[in-house]
Length: 172
Length: 285
Image 1 (cartoon, rainbow over the protein chains, first blue to last red):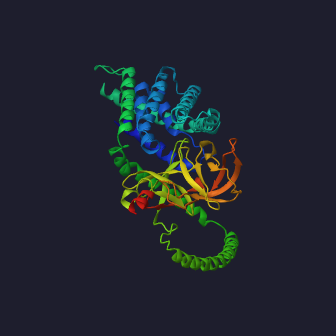
Image 2: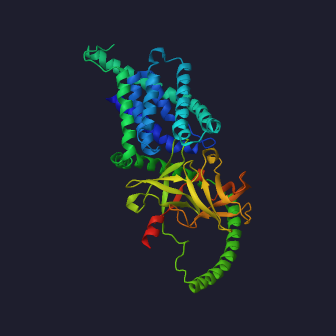
Image 3: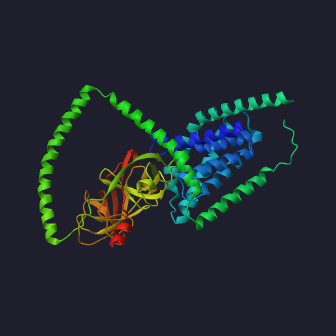
């Protein structure tokens, strides 16, 4: 219960930051994608199911406030959560290469998917401009922010796990 | 390790169930109105939080403005005083012309004046967090008389239209968004053209215009572009921006180019919403 509440708070805070404060720090009108960091990192920390639920909530927020169709970002983020969750067995706390790699892959595929469904299907085939104007800058900026945000999420997750273990051992 | 005593759903099945749920939602959305109850819930939960954050941000930026030095203030004051003088002279001249215009209008019996639309002010509380779209949320909604398709301005220029209204918030799509199309006219020649937002121009805040007839009317860089009389979403005569580049298309029939908008879209804080939509005006007559 506590874990669910804290996860919801993390998602809400990241969402609010992204739509208000981070716009002020946008470089070249591009701001980082915090929600994909949250979805991906909680995915490989806690497994496929948690990843999917987190993705579902993040996607719901995006669809309600920034997107047009309800369900589109939800689906994308559920898939991102599942993909990252399947790497849970390879994940170790002290290794930062795997998280950064996974988040980069998630972000890149998210960008390409958005381009494909929102632009290419409407007859806009200038993939190059979209790649270099939005997808790549967003990717770089997101990875930079990951270095900070990932540590925070990791720390919160560790504390939660310790607490859960303690309460579990009390009952035994 | 936890002891599993109840059968649990494997991840694959959860994935399939959630994906189907999303597809179902997409399908439902196709046929019904968007969002519905979820948006009402959002109005009372997330939007107030966004308002809070943006007010705090505004307060902080006000605070930092307070620390400007005396010297800068004096310099600014001097500059502004000069501007006031110049504007006063301008104003008197314009007022004289205004009287003349009114007299002539009366002669022509033109009773409608397009420049006076009823407006209400609103604050921008949140932007679109994704980099693919350019829209923002304002802190007024249905309760203040805002409707879908209301036009939004900032200062003297057009910003966009309202695409979605909640009880106390509204979402505005700006004209630099990739999905935005505005029917416009060049003020001096009255030729119509289409002003389109473009994702690749979004970062430098420019707009593209197309389908301007390639006739004898000469259009030069710096001419004003306003919304046209044929648009069904935009009321007539709202200022969009200045022509910054123009060239004849390869087909030799049309001209296209770029517009520098009158509004700085990266620094929007307060906007004005015109509460009457074009449909109201056309339908009312």
